[in-house]
Length: 179
Image 1 (cartoon, rainbow, N blue to C red):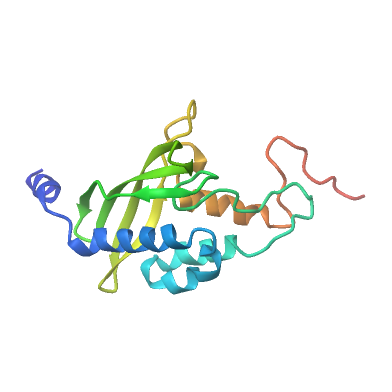
Image 2: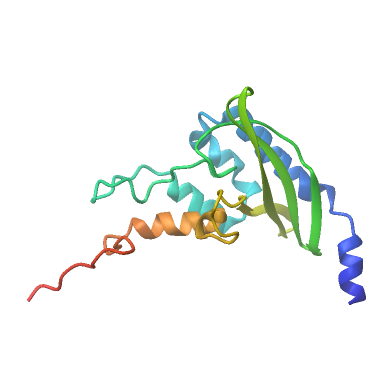
């Protein structure tokens, strides 16, 4: 119990917050072209998350022509509008090599029509470097707090599963077996 209390009181290493600030600064500057320059941020992401994100942004035409299998929201804040600004509001160390950085992000089409989304960015130290391991979005209004799309990793997993030729949308009958 004392170890947990000491961990909760421990300050986050500055590198944990710095990697989040660097990625969000890059995104704020490059949000209209981020898919073309994501490669330059590779070292700031957990390798597994980076692999899924870079695959999900590759062009894909669903054979069902229904828009499935496509990243249809901003992965850095979970909506379909742009980022107008962000700030780091805190960092909570949950293990010696793991922390959550709280990032209020101003989203919208203009400052007059904007709102703040407070997201949690999970960072982990691997190989001596802090990297973004996941992003948790606030629940959409009326959605359960742990909805499947509340985490970037879950959203990417769902998108990539939809790209499988055998994927069947939930609630629809599967392919009929051929006699």
